[in-house]
Length: 162
Image 1 (cartoon, helix red, strand yellow):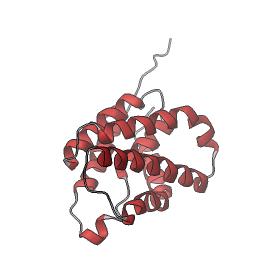
Image 2 (cartoon, helix red, strand yellow; image 1 turned 90 degrees about the vertical axis):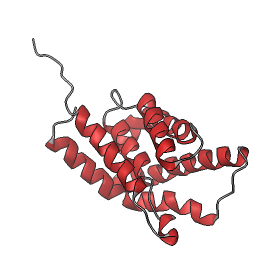
Image 3 (cartoon, helix red, strand yellow; image 1 turned 30 degrees about the vertical axis):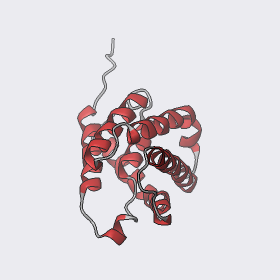
Image 4 (tube, helix red, strand yellow; image 1 turned 135 degrees about the vertical axis):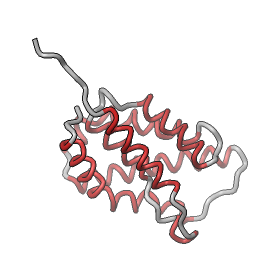
């Protein structure tokens, strides 16, 4: 009898660590607005590829870690990324069938939703509102999605992550 084995848990964790490191890289103020949402893109990819392993709980935990890294109100990104993971799980079979450009549009919408939740919580807590540059992140994430998708798929296949 063949055993069902999950491989690559460490690879998944390392991709999230790499995404967190990309969030922490200091950039000039004007370039900071153009930074894609790397953590959300990695979460979306793994939730699409392995919804039985990466889901709402992982989204919540990664979001909490992102809150700590970014120094914002604890739970802001956690709630937003948990919702993103939930929505991806709900439509993952349909989204897998999309061509890459439609997936990129879906990623833009999901990251836009994440941005809206973060902005809403910041507004409710009385923090400073963001400028219109805040909404560039979903667009840059959409433009970068085909490369992120290709890189993570290559990593998943190379390390036989299932």
